[in-house]
Length: 115
Image (cartoon, rainbow, N blue to C red; front, side):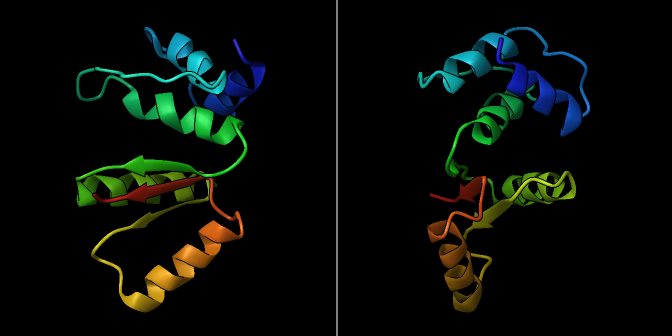
């Protein structure tokens, strides 16, 4: 297991260990693999992409059709010190342009977008 992934799990998210298949999924994604992850609500899917996003260089793009969920996740991540943002129809042109500039200059770890 990636020691950096475990460090982020503990220091950023406050969990002592991964649950179920999370560790295998996180390690696979950190290694550059693709994954389709099916888990029940509350099963820990978000950590499966959030942790690799923080371990790997660049910005991870998360496509989510649920605007309320993406706003909630971004707010929580920001409170944890993660550089996260969302781009959807709730933003005006000025906010969208500022966000796009942040993305281009590499200021974001995660960007949630609505399809």
